[in-house]
Length: 471
Image (cartoon, rainbow, N blue to C red; front, side, top):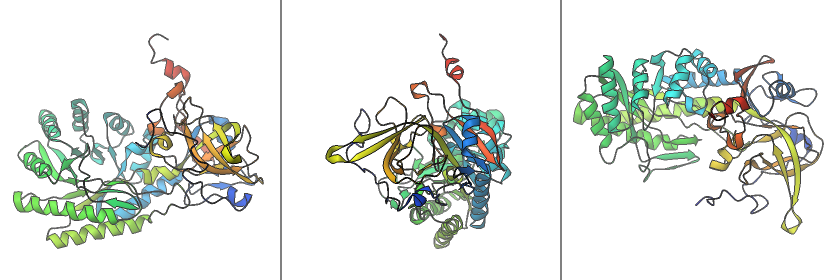
């Protein structure tokens, strides 16, 4: 097991995951690595961080903390960059993966920048539709779609529904027939390839809840069944091989397998695979040492890989689709926290670890506890000339595993009331947030051209008590 059932232990050794090399000077500690922070991030004449021209001190005063501060310009730029790069590489459409983080504002921004949106639930579908996203720009995922969700998708004329099981075929066909429409679908296949960060594994990865197995023939059987149903239109295949992928090696193995399946479907069933959706998973830099590929380079490599495999199999190059989510919204947002307590703790052998407690924690960022995720943090409300000390940034929850940053270098003069900024929290932080210990979930504020506007308002205690019929 990765952790004890009671939760992760927290004081095994002084540096468990490594805080990186100790900064050589306070100036180095105050610097903002461009690869990690939003493109507009800088320090102003007072030494405070600015995002989108907004001083973080002003954002904290106006909107409170914790707060997610989102650089609208940075997000829009990344959406444009992905669309341009992947269309050049042969994509017919690029979808924004809503699961990373979705609001009506973000749905409108990415749509205005030319992206479609893939949704994975009726709730995400409702947000996209409320934002005015046309149904034909939407794709719907889900390994256990309810009939209510499927009916809503069909009614909205969603462009693609991804078939994830034999039950899906029956349910989608029934909903489409009752609505008097022909619904376009993709079949999600499990290829036996799993890729994460710098490594990919190409064996024994069909043991998962998503998709239809290639090795058992289930994927091809699904295509055969779909072709017999007049209310369904088979358009192609979908695969997803992992997350935080920093190179194209895993895609190369996956492309070879999915193109081979497309070739077999044509040879054996006479059905052309017109689209290949290769999912998302493109990585971002959480730490300065992370090295994701340049977006155009990754796009061209993947497009070239698929093209070569199609030529080798003797089939036409299908239209490609991709689903970046984290790569668009992740680096565009930071989380601002206020320091509440600073507690030096002497460990065995005389070593000292400084615990810095902030006013949020695992309720707004569960990824450290869930995935052992690592983040970059800096003192944001000022610059400091104090020497760096090894710190652990922790939350305020009644849980020893409530850790935001396991090991980080922060100035020795850090004090209650200071603001800390954690980088690259746009994806899977607010979207996975909870109300543990009855903490209201933080708001999300967009920063642009020196001003802010609320994208998602902060919850209040009244919001939480409203759900309690006895309150």
